[in-house]
Length: 382
Ligand SMILES: Cc1ncc(COP(=O)(O)O)c(C=O)c1O
Image 1: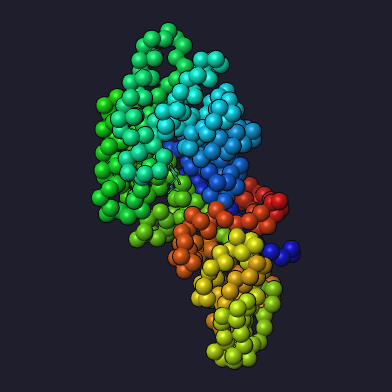
Image 2: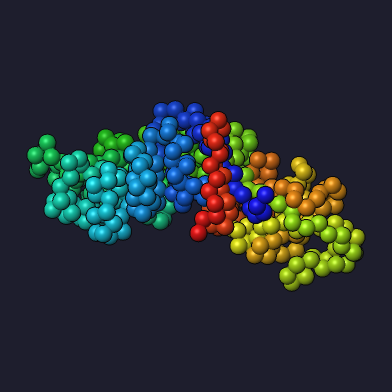
């Protein structure tokens, strides 16, 4: 056995979680959000497994081009839109739907389409800033753009429109808190604008879909819930019927008897309170395990919880084996996933499930398991 961390990706769980989204928002079409390498789960495998999604949403043009390059033919949405003329030129013929979050976007798209007309109209989503305060048009800007596109369409031959307004989209700032009053207001603003112009609307992320009925819009954009992460502050993934997709594990590479008073790891931040067995696990921040994980962060060995001790090194962590007396060199050690929720580890570390899942390094082997189909191992990515 080759020693080192492995991230097992359960594609059956991914499909189950998509079905949970479908059941929560049965009238919505689903952009499955697979940006950032499908939240660290391998974008190609995840896109292939998510056949029941209506389309895929990514953050950047580069990600959309990558999906087309591997033969993904479903509708694609670039949520950050294009950054410049080069990016636009690269996607124009790729049937990629673009977010327009500034009026210069529309100028750029129209000027390129006029010199380089496409066989089908370019679909654009106007992004309305309803309170996120990040990307987006203010209400008045959005209205001006819609009126401009409509005026242009009526001036053109109806057979050859350059552009199609696909809808209004907005992003929720506080949907992780089911009681937050801002979410209802954001949904209301986006819905009112869409209704006024008879356009579809896209609002809900995972938290919106699961906790806010008004966010179950014509199109929803779930991300974290597909990977089995809870998007809500006060609900576990299990309570939401979400199954963990990634299980990260490694192995014990040493089991040592330490005398009382022994200091563990860099900075000598942990002192053994008694004679005890300490295990060393082959995972560290060089693999993407969080360096700030404190003493006490749980891992699972032989189905028992064991606590991390001292500082996380680049390649190793130390763990307390007092609760796992039979632990032996070679034992698998589970860092998160099936049996230990990534949210629990994230909370200990002071971060969120999203960050832990996204940050594994290319040194971690990924195994994509598709149930009946053979598992596909991807050797460490370089
Ligand atoms: C614009 C937009 N929509 C949808 C999502 C998906 O969000 P979540 O992973 O919380 O479901 C994101 C993620 O950051 C996003 O930026």
